[in-house]
Image 1 (cartoon, rainbow, N blue to C red):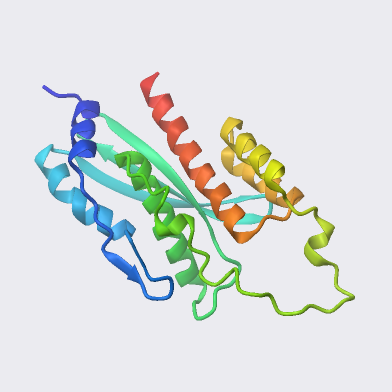
Image 2 (cartoon, helix red, strand yellow):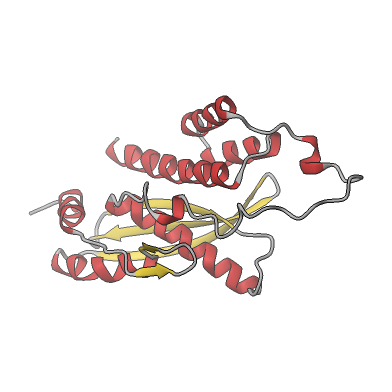
Length: 209
């Protein structure tokens, strides 16, 4: 009889999760949490596995995150992976529940990516800025920008990535980095990507012990 690890390995090898969504603003296709779930359901049924996802809200360094966990179980043993997504302080056209819901979907997607070994490294989510790179409106000269935090250069970015990867708490390491330096939207997205991948890698490593 196959163990849950062998069953999960078979599911990972056979899973095809197409990018079923299209972003008309950025002109690209991407896969959502729902796309992954719909694609994996038949395989889970075939191997007698159940998928359960849950969320919790955590705060680190004054920032609020959705911590999503995806668990695959055979009724006896289970394997899990986690994903994090930061809630926007405000998002135009969305109320508080919608902001949390969007962060939840994003975090769950990363948890599923880690659980089923889906590589989104080149996916739209890692490069999409949703207009955040648009020229900023002029600010009053009397206002100090970004609280006088130094702007992160390439070397600082490399150190921040390494700091997150080597930290026992990647989320806290990320919060400490953004509190100390000013990162561009693209750099911030890369750091969050590193947090999620590091959490997934540490979770997989702990399961092997």
